[in-house]
Length: 414
Image (spheres, rainbow, N blue to C red):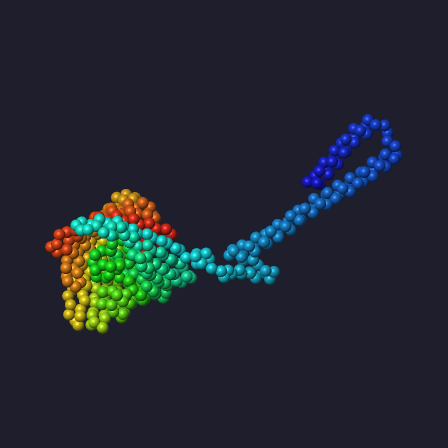
């Protein structure tokens, strides 16, 4: 800017000097010499300005080169194109730090609160903070992932699940190690807040435990194709020491589950599976075998999947507990259906039948329900249950359930 102002001043002086010289008388020799000296000074300044202007493109280019070098080094450090050294060999930049997702696992919390009314009988325990579940999930490295779920239920704190799994093993096998809900049938693997009714089906609770079947051990999973998609799961676990399924035994139990999946049409899917569970307790000479068949049919039109979905599912279970080779087989199962009326409302109906493991007492239940899926984070459910045990008078129960979740886990099945 100073250079520009100097040039403008120079031209202004010259312009003003011309008319002034025309009006005045002929200059003396002293005036001529003074004017020549000023011209030499102005010429020196003009030469200096021209020299500065001549050097400016070179300086800008040098600065641009330095800026380009800094940008190339930054891009290489961020994982972009590597910077080349003077020898022409690429300079590699490798970051050894862990990213934020690895340092901070995904944390989720789910709340499940119910209100009950039962007839006939005295009204008590009408409000139940059924369960609060805290979930932690994280990728440990490119090869393994962990999931840990802590349950706060009825004032007790327990680890519902805590396991790590590896994928991409030879033979496309997935390996799970730790404590997990086992892959028995259709719904046992699901967390309680995700099942279609307020509780697990009655047969699962009476044959596998109030909270379903879970154990600590190893699980191997493999999927393959051919006339559909097929999945095989094999698990070796030790169940809880106080469970009734194996009489409190601490020896390993063995489970094998086969699931077959077919896509019948663009909108219809079907799966059929079978499960066998076996365990022993030498202290009481108990041998326990549980077999199950599960079925599910889902209709979900792709163009209206948010508004329409119809699912029919069912399981048939057989339990045989033998002491010294003697024992009877009990049978139980359920059939249920859910239909999505629109984006928010889901109607459901379930039927349960079970023969009690010891006495063989038969219990039947009919359970209609209506669920309002308020959002991804909240759903509300109203449910009626009719129950009859042999020839006793039936009982009636109305339940209201509120489930909410924060974090990425939401209402996933598991």
